[in-house]
Image 1 (cartoon, rainbow, N blue to C red):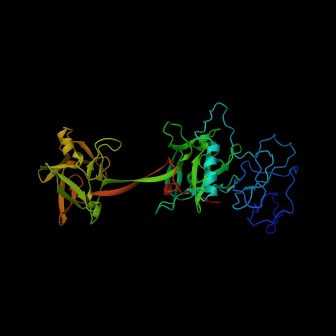
Image 2: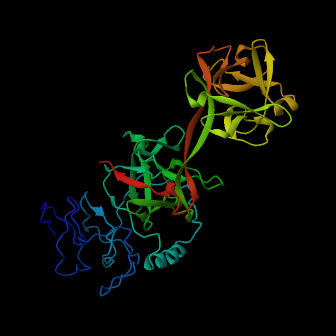
Length: 427
């Protein structure tokens, strides 16, 4: 069929022009199943039946067509047409939409949820106006098409998923057009309604995958293979927002972007900043809670006593914790700072400026070190700044907020905005 707008030839089943997107005239008669020029994608659209429209025929895999069958032009597109009945299904040779050929010795993961159970759940939701709308994401089958994966966090609209090629893990960063932020989304030729994500930096040799590490929530890049963990479903949930689930895990978990807030301590240029204003609150049994004006009295200076950030300093939610109760011991014109818990357990550790990274502070072995000698400089009312003998009055202890971003598989929910993905084509 010839597009009346751009004059590009289109295959008979197209409703819109593959080049310009202009709606094509309705065909005079349905195409013959024997027409060797017909071509259909490997994943037909699935839509509820419309009144007075022929029912969708069930697709039955058949033998590949004769070699003389003509394949579509490079600009062939895959479409999901809302409110349009699907075309009759005919056997056709599936197009090879990605490479390379998977290694023969790579085992294929078994799906944890049967796909027919997913259909049973989705169909009633679609028919009765459920929150999830079963539809395919528009993907153009051209190797030069790239997409970004953004999210809907408030204030984070300009951030997208980025690949760390060395670590093989996913990050979230400000969109800058770098190849590590660009993804090719390719329909899988063998599995219906499934897509493979390939990063432009690493190429077709590696695909986005749920890592089989017994916890089933880590996502990274792995060698492309015939693997359910590398096949993804894309479901529209609201407007231009999509939920991305994995064939291996089923619909129970979805690709999720979330951030955690950390309130760490740093030595910064002295100034009239709320993060540098501190006050003491007496603790029962001796010692003080040291709180910060930026975060209020609900957060107290906390010496991390175990775990990932051992010996680092943060602002933690105030409670009756020994590592938040500080003992201020005089030392000449200065004083040293240790916690009640460190002192009780004879850990012999004090608050110290890191001599190698002077911006950082930590709990270190107590000793006659200038980085462990602190001074309170009054500012206003009960508030004061904390400076060290090592760095002088020009640097003050400041509470600073940092964000750490994660991309992983979490329990699927349409209420979680971290699962609202915006898939934008960049070229």
